[in-house]
Image (cartoon, rainbow, N blue to C red; front, side):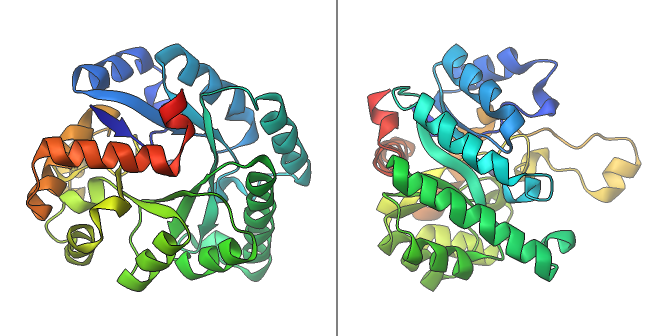
Amino acid sequence: MWIDTHCHLDAAEFDADRDAVRQAARVAGVTRCVIPAVHAAHWPQVAQLAERHGDAYALGIHPLYVPQAQQADVLALDRALTERRDDPRLVAVGEIGLDFFVPELCTPPMRERQWFFYTAQLKLAQKHGLPVILHVRRSADLLLKGLRQCPVVSGIAHAFNGSTQQAEAFVDLGFVLGFGGTLTYERSLQLRRLASEVPLSALVLETDAPDIPPQWLYQTAEQRALGVPQGRNSPAELPRIAQVLAGLRGLSLADLAAATRANAQRALPQLAAA
Ligand SMILES: [Zn+2]
């Protein structure tokens, strides 16, 4: 019934119980997860996980891994995309993008380095006819500039948290916007407004697990100091996140499920084929 369009099932947080996590999500109604890669060493693993669980995957270099990435990784990505061209589970290049939130990534040389890996991977997406999964953090305008210089077929602006104008610009370029745990917080006023105002055709759902715990899993600093562990986000949370979004938009869960599923399949066409 549900597609989690962004789930890091390969993350170390799931090492102890990965299969059980995926099974729990299936029981909760999450039929498909999209597993984006964060760096070259994980490309084989995300492909294997997708195969094992009937899911989908993307290959790319995440901006947070740009400091360690090598130029040779771009050539390796080109080769991997070529080798896997007939794999129906490969749905995008990702996770790629720009992060101007993390201070170490904001120095001029690091901004340049991020731009190099972002645009190099956009060119590969274009060359291989693949959509992209974008990491957008204080970087929407530059990401859009890159997409205008190097258009790709479609994609997802994941964990989108920008302005209405930026949302419209992504939609104009064939993108959909990923919404997840952040909108479960009542204080996320601007994001909640955006999620209720953008066209239904622009929405996809995601958990970004194990990151971005929804409000019901979040522990405050005081609670953590008392020894209450921070809740681990997982793809099984997707239906409850969807419930919040359905409430914000005054939609039935069934209608939201149908629309977000169709949107995900439009943004990542291989999802429909696999
Ligand atoms: Zn991610």
